[in-house]
Structures are given as C-alpha cells and as structure tokens.
Image 1 (cartoon, one colour):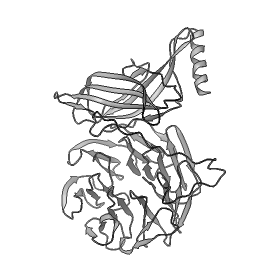
Image 2 (cartoon, one colour; image 1 turned 90 degrees about the horizontal axis):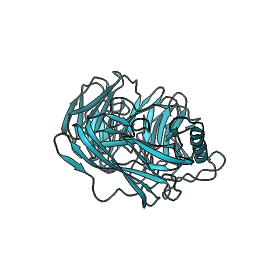
Image 3 (spheres, helix red, strand yellow; image 1 turned 180 degrees about the vertical axis):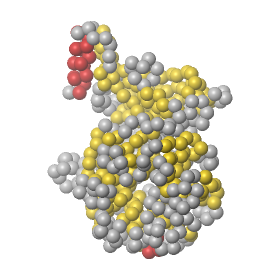
Image 4 (tube, helix red, strand yellow; image 1 turned 135 degrees about the vertical axis):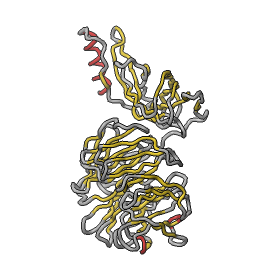
Length: 461
C-alpha cells in the first residue's frame, strides 16, 4: 500500500507537469548501518525517495546521513551500498564517492534536492532483499594517510522477532534461560520496588519481580542474561533469567550507581554505607576491592577493554582505573558536578555535568577532548549501536552523530530520566514522574505505562 501511494504521488507530479520533487517513502526494509572498528565515519540514517523518471517510470533515490568522527579532516570517502537478504547475500551493490575537505564533527545529510552528493539510484523494493547495508570502504586523511575497511564484511544482524499475537491482547512470551536476548528490564516503584521484564515488541511484562526494598536504583545485565539490581538498602541483587526472585545478594553494595562490564565485572557506589565504589571481578563478592569517590546514579561506566570510569560528584577530576586495578591510570579535568559517564564501543569517553548542561567527549584511552556539547538540560545519556550519543531531556531524546556538537533531530516524547539502547536499534527512555517508558524504533514510538516511579532501564544482550 505504501509503495502504491508513493507511485501515485510521483505519477500525479508527472501528469500535472510539476517540477521533479521527491516524495519521501516509508521504507519497507531495514538498515544495517554498522561500520568497521576504527572507521572515521558514523552513518546515522538512510532514507528512500521516489521520483518521476520518465513516461510512467519511477526511480528510487536513496540517501545517507553521516558524521565525520575522525580527529583530523578527511579528503575522500568511498561507501558501498548494497541490498541484501536476511542472511547477508547481496543482490545489488552500488558506490558513493565523495572528495573534498570534511572537518571533524561535520554532519552530512543526504537529500535528492541537495545535489545528490550522498545519494544513489537503487532498486530497494525487492521483497527478497529487505536489508540495505552501508559500509565505508576507504577514507583518506588530510595528512595523506588512508583508512581501508577489512575484506571480510560484518556478520548479519541477528534481529529479535516480536511475539505474536498482539502484545496488547495476549500473554507475552516467557523470560527464561533460553529466551532472554533483547528483553527490557524496568526498575520502578516509589515505595515498593519492582523490576518488570518485557520481551521485544511487548507492552505487557513477561515477569514482574518484587523486591524487599523501597528503591531499585539501577539495573544491568551481564553477557549471560543475569540481571543485576542495585537497591538503596538491600544491597546488590542478582536474578538469573527466568527467576522470580533474586538468587543471591551482596549485602555491602547498597547505593545508587551500577555498572556491569562486558567481561562480567560489576561496580557499585552510592550515598549509603561507606560511600565508596566497590568493584566485584566477574560479579563475585570474593576478590572485591574498594575505590574512592562519592558517586551518584550514572557515575560509573566500564570501557570495552574493562577500564572503569568513576565520576566523583564532589570533584573536578574524573578518574579511570585499568581493568582489575585500584590505581588510577588516567585523570580528566571536568566541571564540578560531573555525575554521568559512559563509553561507546570504541572507547570514546563521555562525561556530563547536569548542573552545567555540558557533556564532553574524549578520544579513546587519552584525555584529549574530541568535542563539547552545551545547552541541553540532560538527565541521562547512552550510546546506541551506531556510536551515536543519545541525550535524554525533559522533552524527549536527542541523538548526536559521533563527534557532532549539534543534535541530528529530536525524538519527541516524555521526559527521559533514564536511557538504554538495544543492539537492534531500539531506544528505551524511562519517565520517573509519568511512570512510563517510551520505546523508539526508527520512526515508531510505543509507550509502556502504569509503572509509577521509573528509575532505571536496561536491555539484555
């Protein structure tokens, strides 16, 4: 039906003599915009347009949006754009080549009426090729050096399938040891704390876990799907997938901040107990060690290599500790009141001051500033699968291209007091006052309501 509407609009323009103008078409396919590690470009969007192409003929123009994430200017870019089936088989492969001077952080928004520099004509409507993949193949830097993509492509995305029938009229799928990937955990409750678990595409929980505590301040999953819940008084709780109650408790870890690393390390901190950061290697109480720092919610983050960032809310120094070490490996000078930290998949560190409305990004493994973003009254942030920085504010979510200092757009919705992003591209924004979670999946927004006092959200890998 959507295709027919696009064709009718294009035919109307042709018959009536209207000058060539693109009518945006809602795509019936999905995007794979992942880039190879170290790529100096972050591709953030890809859209299709239908235009008259002659007597009763129509052409499909596809355009990409990307940000230069390199630390120096780039003088040439070579992209490959291909249509593929779900298994990754290519049916069509085209190229986009750009030459010029592209400064770090510069945003390029492709559009048919903008010279088509970042666009290409493509047959995107094949039902047997529903995936459009965009890959940067090569780039040349201003100093003459080049970046070249590996010959082996990235594996196909394993996409979660929403359960049927409709999540609004039937029981949702179970949360279990064999079914937990991409499930969403929502910690809520102003007095009696609960954690609700939602399957992909569902608005009815698969499980609701009641906790013997007033407040569940943080939730996070490890690689095996185990749920960690940070409470304000009852310590750190561990819930295996499918369980209806915690299987174990670490009593000395009560607080407000929680982080779980890719290797299973866990860090907690808060305004109770001894007011220190506690690190649990592999999530085990044995071998744990303390670190200094008065940390609030969102002030701990593990890097991909296992380094731990600690944002002391009373200090102007942000510290990073090497994996397994209680000795500082790097320090960053930050504004007082810097309470939020996070890493992207390549190790870029972001540090945010909610008081000063400033967020600063640093190059991986260094204290060199990449860019600074100011002016947004942010309440939370995270990175998505494409490396975009997502800022949560009182009027929705603001995505920033890697290295960009201005938002690409605004995802309009309720306040985003907590944020999480799934590897399938879904964004969850928790609204504490409204008791709801907004789920953004491309152009679609779904709201889960009735969860009074949403404090934290997290996706299971």
